[in-house]
Length: 326
Figure 1 (cartoon, rainbow, N blue to C red):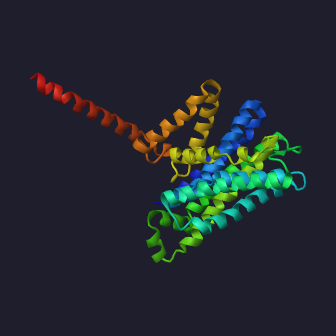
Figure 2 (tube, one colour):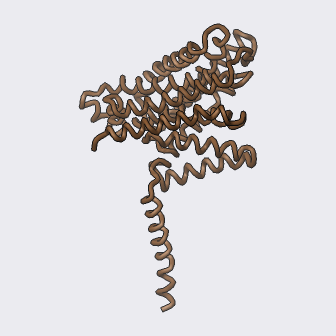
Figure 3 (cartoon, rainbow, N blue to C red):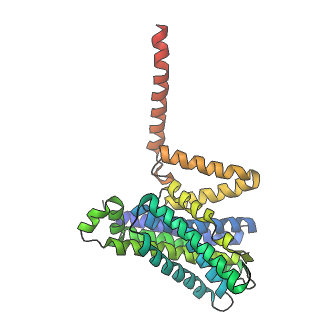
């Protein structure tokens, strides 16, 4: 099948969504723009996470570490450096840490890799806290120089579009094929000449760069940041859940799930704050059991199959009763 029509379709969809997002600040309220900003943040985080983890099937829980590093980089440099350099510096520092971290732990897989990445996230958070208490004598940063709302919004939008565009390009490249080969069978990929160690570190660094850039951009959204805020494990966990529920191996699944959960989060947090986490957990269970491909795998045939399975189950439940009555 020719890949060009699919590429054209993906680019057209991305262009249409970008145009709609660009127009949103001109007619949306402050609340709508704030919600859209959160949505774009998770689009960038989940899409970049899926770029590496969805292909290689490595379960990374280090997103909060890279996000926090970018946020602290932005908070420390926003008064001295231009805004684009602040974003680039946040991405660079996060990618550099990811290279070191990846070289240390990417030889592991499964639970061991997930636990170690989460442990390193906590290690970085406590190291930043210790540094602030020992060197600066306080914990946290007050941000006095903050860009305008539209500047922050356009920056996060650009990062989200770039994350999706990078996924489109990588999935059609030899690098993306190498990532998928590692996910299917890493040893066979090695026998075919793939430098799996280098490919994994590069993919991990790309994911971290996006998380660091998003963290630097979002740090100015708060007037005060501290390690507990920007290294919050919930940021990493929600990124993983959004990607898994949307479909980590798909292109548009993380984007769809990020939009759905941003709207769901704001609605439930205002009305029933405790119900949000319950709903998130239930959706994850349902997707794992009945929709392993995520929301992006939903088709008309999926609902037809569910209907057939339900009718079969009901027929099996009624069959013994008919037998006993006759």
